[in-house]
Image (cartoon, rainbow, N blue to C red; front, side, top):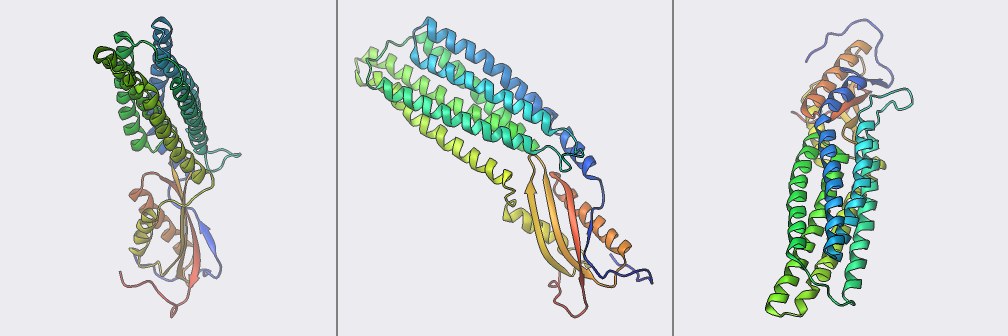
Length: 332
């Protein structure tokens, strides 16, 4: 892309150019992609309510402490899902005067909340499982096994569905809901194994099999704790505006190098703001370019990056003067 020089005022200072689509338009475009995410969370919420009633009801009728504990765990999931749903709806609001960068981080706050719920669930499962090792084992029933198996299959389907939607929309609240479902898959699997071993032990007269459920529960509690730690760490990184991964930054830099007017790349930063990304760039261009020329260059570069990465809704480009004879980017 070539620009003719004019006698209009020249660049002799640093400028910030925001070109192309406005930030508001970018947020609306990304928000439209997240309608499916809210639907996924609604489905998860309704499913959690149904499963909670089923597990607690079956646990009380069949006197199954495993199902009862799993039902109480599911009740906590309802609270987490409501938080995820609320944050997802808030995050879709466009930028306003008080929140010029949008409301995307509402999803990250919900993700951190879900991580806390999972930590509490992990300790709950672990506490109940350890306590069960020092108590006489209860009798298991085939109905309890069927209820646990239904929960396992249901939660696995929900996990596969929400993780697919979450990755497609880059929605932190949907991803948090998906990982919450995964924790439930672990818990339901432990219940199936524990109840199954109990039934098998009764049939084969294996006394040790009666303690299969608490042992499986301890293992599950550790898996859920690990999952919560990973979710919490990611949420904290985003809230602290941790840079996106180095590979993505390198892609942005490669795009900048394709424009012959970019003589120097001073800095490229990008941060996640929930389900979208904001990019900050500092580059050097010829110091005798006009403001209009610099604006056109910024506009072209912004479009280039936003076309490459649909999650990017804003690119802030700061232009620094470059003088002929200074170090220039290597040949493209």
